[in-house]
Image (cartoon, rainbow, N blue to C red; front, side, top):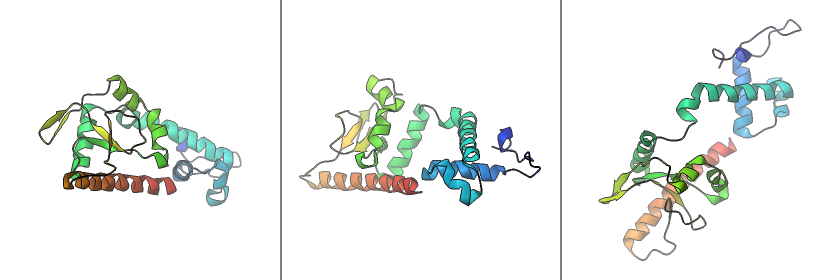
Length: 190
């Protein structure tokens, strides 16, 4: 950030004292984002005013968008989906899985306003096909529970599996969802 944005360069302030470093300003911004704290809560920890913390957050977000927007803050491409598929298959054993959503963590609210869901529903999402058990599928899927809309992109578990194959699927699916939920819970708490 310091190399890309003049705001993050340490300068002498009006009183003739050195201002905050790039590290302090970035820390203020990241703490606000990670912990969801108000700007005025950083005055004791960083000795930074509410206004400075709020400005740091604005400049930080603008900097992230400018520096990383084209690479990371965009709609996923076919190649992105293939990488996601590879990771989920290797880690969870589910070919074609894009991710997991969970009602209790409000993921559906974020997902419903996501251009990714709009693209999936309207058929505009990249055709990131895959094979599973010898069958061809045009697009990936998300693991979810019974409360989600009946879209082909949401794979729900069996409520009462009747055979060993369905029991194993339910167990692996719930394990994958729990792992993803735990990771998001840790991030949310931090």
